[in-house]
Length: 288
Image 1 (cartoon, rainbow, N blue to C red):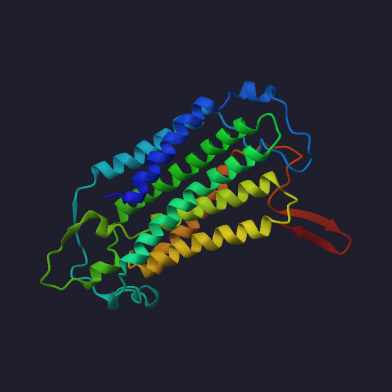
Image 2 (cartoon, rainbow, N blue to C red):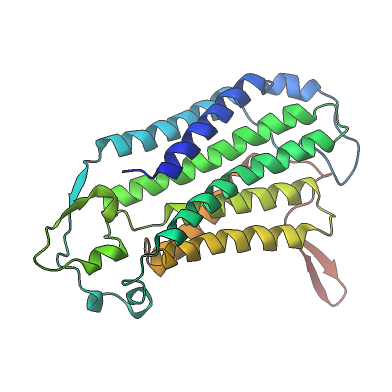
């Protein structure tokens, strides 16, 4: 079954998506809006098609819900009894860990990671003097919802196909039943970690696009990625995932968090890229 945090997060993001669709102006309207004239910092960094992107986001959420609905309440352990000796050395360490307090903490952390990009955009809009600041906020929200919908739907699809037993199933004895709750076979890959990294990279990328010259960029990136990594580590310490589950979630989640916002970014000279390469007489200078 899909975790409680994912059900709650999905509901909240669906509501934000619906509101964003109603509040987001069409492309024709956005082109007529006055733009910030500041050469380095601008509020309207993303461009969306409300109908197309709204439909895509809704389809991704629907696909995720369909996968969950098709899943039965129980699953059969294909490795029963699952033996830690069959795991790689890195994952074998996780088998005997199951502290519930860490598990609860990671639920809170992933919810915070999902909400953080929206919260940052809301703060940016509230403190900006740009006339299109709230329109930009709703565009940001639609972009973030699309990224998270892609991350969660992809994660649910892979879990449904792979059905890797979670670490705690390796504690079952041979005489125990090989029938377990469906969630016990949803180890690969970590949805908490993927969601946290999508939120972290989306937040840091948005800050970088909006403030390409800010001295705070390295701190925003470091803080966001550290928080996401801590969420992944917590999933391991809580006995819910193997290290390889978390590493895969981090890579895929970060990829979505970078690609979706980047694909909606306005192509303008005023906005610097994440990586800038400058030619020098004796080589090149790379700026982040």
